[in-house]
Length: 581
Picture 1 (cartoon, rainbow, N blue to C red):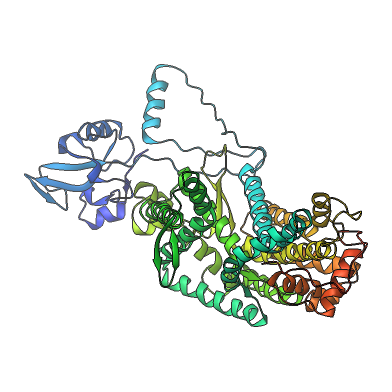
Picture 2: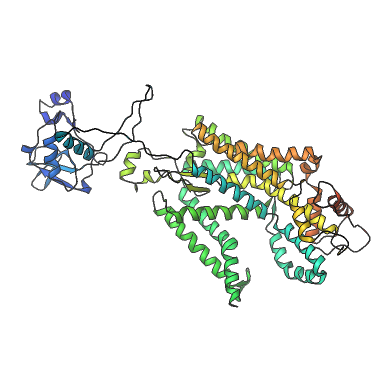
């Protein structure tokens, strides 16, 4: 069939001139003269290309450097290009000959398939059919039976949530460790270590932000305004720049600094590089980690801004590392004090997620959340963007970097599975609260036996493991609930074939699990208003004097059947245990 259409009414309106009835291909969509062009004699072309165009096609193709050319409806008069066919030769330009995705008709049984052949393929088939009988077999590309990328991103999300929230209780865990070291080595070494670490602990405490009810409502307001601002301004590159700068510092602190410190210390090179009035003493490992972190982030940012739809492993591996560091840093800094604040904050996030995913399409022209998450949504003309991927409209569709991304292996379409960082870090707050509650019990249990060396106590290492994995703990059950909730979210994506607000499943699973366990154990009121034993452990850790309530908590959580230890508490008139710094 012809690549040109013929409009009889248009030809008659043009005074019967046949050429005026031809509907010519469109520039950039059907052909591109920048890819190659040529000329063809009018004698070699038979208009209006109504039915059989094989000979005409071969004539035009011979005049181009590509495998197929199209007439543009313009002509040359010498070197001058005219907008009609009045010249001595017709202009031809290289045709786009790309595949188009077709969809079969499933109304019939068996379904009727639909297949698209390019012009080059059609000519090959036609040439073969002239010399022999041709049988065409249609084969469907193999697809994995299930989404391996979705399974991998689920495992990554659960791993990051557990790791980051477990790390949020490092200070309490370190306190327990020092108490147990004091049991074995005596108080002298522990006191020296506390004095050496006092400045670092004070510096860390300045960074801690205990969340309140005001933060919960502030989150809802600020997040909504920010999302709408991005929706209307499309300042997506600004977000990428700020994200790269923030994550460069985090990856320098959490990953590169320990590596640089150990490497330089091995060769006795980790000395003070300079002293700054604001920063204090800055070591060489600080300088090395900061420089390497920002170089790493700068390379990632260049790819994010300059490369359309980046798929190289360096890009998405770096993005996942940045996301994990962001989650860890946030959960070490922001803390939930009780179940009441947790319910308010995650409840606000629950409403926010559902509203901007499911409700906004009825208010705006599209889903605000999905549009912003994909940097403006997919391009309006995918076929055009396949030809010109660097055009401004075609640069849309790349997800914003605040997510975890893994390519789907064995998928010929090169798709990826995505998980938003908010779906990890927000439920991670309540996972971190549970980790801190369990470690607070462990600290109080260890403190109750801190001065009882050799009097029948179980070994420190065995007792520490029992304290962490106690049946009465909250951390492990809530981590399991998070894993189940995230699996439910991915299952909903597969079943509904559309994006899902993961918090719709994660918030009820995590908050509901904590509330249920607290109710079953008779601790729901304490959890709702703020676990008293968590405050007591923090007081002990910070070096404050123990009140009668603190001493009572040590007694309770050392002897409680649901706690980590069956050691008899020792609460007497002896001086209080040295504070953990």
